[in-house]
Length: 220
Image 1 (spheres, rainbow, N blue to C red):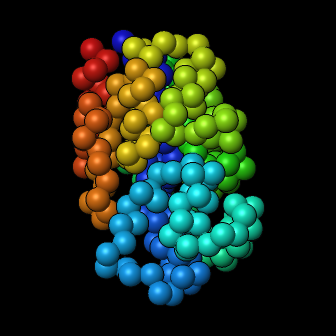
Image 2 (image 1 turned 90 degrees about the vertical axis):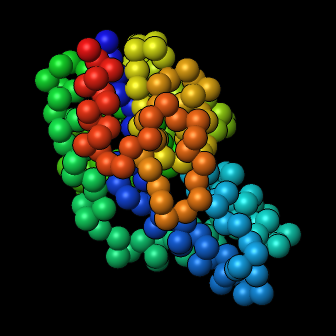
Image 3 (image 1 turned 45 degrees about the vertical axis):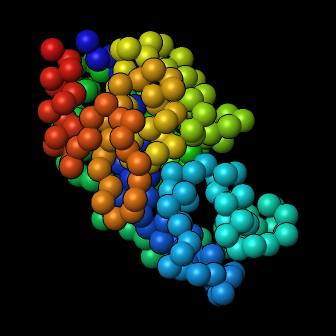
């Protein structure tokens, strides 16, 4: 029996993962106009925690600036880029049947995201779904976010369920790695716009309707 469902946020609840990816690439190109866009593999940017991201941005930019300086410039750039983002439009509305089913069955719901807690709350409130979740856990609460399993292990502890009683929906390589390292059955939401390795997931789905069917099957 499933006692809890844990969701990643970016790329799962809202279709922002690829949006983030695009903004990060544009920032790199702005900072380093000479970068070879054809030969550079930007895919490692996807699904990283913020601390990992700043390291990767600095590498691609080819800068000796401090991580705090890279963070300052990127956050300024990112804030402007996101001014026009409408999270309700990016919200995957086919998620509602899963949320409603879970509540009707007494199945606990959680978000475990590498994003900041403030950003998670902003997105969930924008989509009018915050009250569905029993636990909201941010990567900023742990020393190392995904792919380290700590974010999932701590979420399980707060839910008071064991790994074999939970299921998670992820999309990124780092997120899938973290969930599997925590011992949780993992559904990957298929991403076709970037080369993401999702092969470690237990299930690969095209949409939330398919994820819902798998959850119901596993709950029998």
